[in-house]
Length: 281
Ligand SMILES: [Zn+2]
Ligand SMILES: [Zn+2]
Image 1 (cartoon, helix red, strand yellow):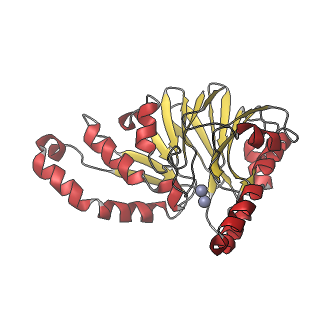
Image 2: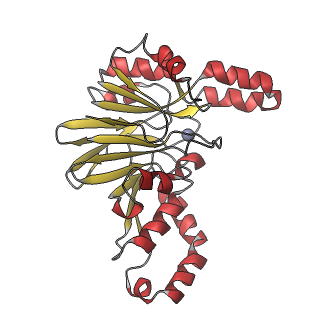
């Protein structure tokens, strides 16, 4: 099982960090979790071009986590020799978002149909959406996926995923504060991937940009801090903690500072770094 951070950024545009997304490769499957800014480019860099994706899992419908879903769907359609539907699993509301996205893509579909006979004769650009809720389970090939509740209120519904295959397990928590359901989902996992922020750095941002102080305060109460993620990892007894979705963006040379916040709370392996940082279980 290999987990690659295909995007470690956040809603804040960064020259070096794509928006949030993670690639899980296991049991012959390429499973993408979330579709942030630039994901198709990072998938190419990871050696898994978009047509080779098995399925896409969406943790929640915040823009930074879905902004490039349209790119993935279109790219997959036009680059797959014999197109098959893109399969998306997400929380309730995903179908409505995908319907709107498909409406947005209508002109492009027509242009390509008009120009490419082989695209016209194929099944077309199709997305099969499965809306899933906490407690649901499903299979992607031989990989088993368990859906868990997360807490990113007032954003709701939000879900996390536990993927199990070949005796290994990874949890993709998405944006959430610590909660007992997340602990349960993570219990004993080989790898736990958590989106995090740094309240201490956000405090500095507030001082430099007072006009954004109120908005900066708002984001603190519905994300895990680095310390929170480390404590969740320890409570759940995971082997490896992967941190991603760095808010604010982790600058080169700051890695040790971020690690130092986590290590007092979690003695397992901690992985963080630039886009395409990977861990194996
Ligand atoms: Zn979010
Ligand atoms: Zn986010």
